[in-house]
Image 1 (cartoon, one colour):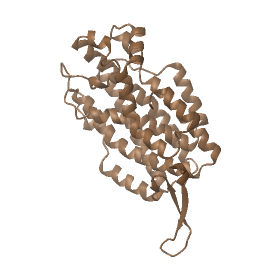
Image 2: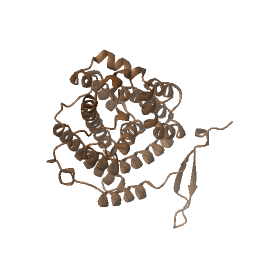
Image 3: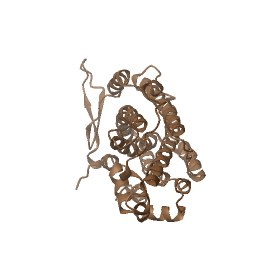
Length: 324
């Protein structure tokens, strides 16, 4: 019996001059598009749809009383016994701190991503569209990190760095990550948060500044996701077998670390809740598990299609709670 990944293969096509020297890469999702053509389209889109958050957003406007900073249904404690005991004011305060914690997580991840991206292009043609777009994406991520940091300060809450253990695990990941592993981790960091932000920016219950920040991020991250998906498909077809297997394992471990980092227990201390009780209720929450798996589903379906969710890597994804 053949599987999706068994059907992966290369074919040859002739270019306009009749030479049969252009290899078409094909996986379970179909033929890959030309790398330079994709980058050219993304560069055109970047020229038309990029934003300067310092000018685009009204940073001086005061917060609006009674509005959340993150959709209630996406908060870690939603629908738990603790949530049902909390008053509206404390729920809004939870949203303010969790939005800051997620923004802090986003900054941490984008700094990792920028380092991986620079490493990817280090030995590639500096005049290629592929490298030009990578540099454009790095510039986007710089603006996003500054935007998130400014939103945290504007929300009058502390930044929430990840745990020291996760911080140091990321150092190891950056050192050993394969090229396909780097793009798999890029998608892990971008797609779950992107799903949440797509629910946030149109939600009129949410503070206007937060809606503006998430709108900018969603529009610009759509290009980043396209770039990473296409490159990950290419890498998984061309990398040696050992590198493919290491990618599956490192990606699964990154999923485990990332899912843990999605909840920062310091948030509960800062809004007057018992940390141990709150963490235990989040772990036991069926709603929370469904939110995280739904947010990751588009990504896990894609990774499954291209042969990443196999063996030890798949089991690590399941242990992360992001894959049923």
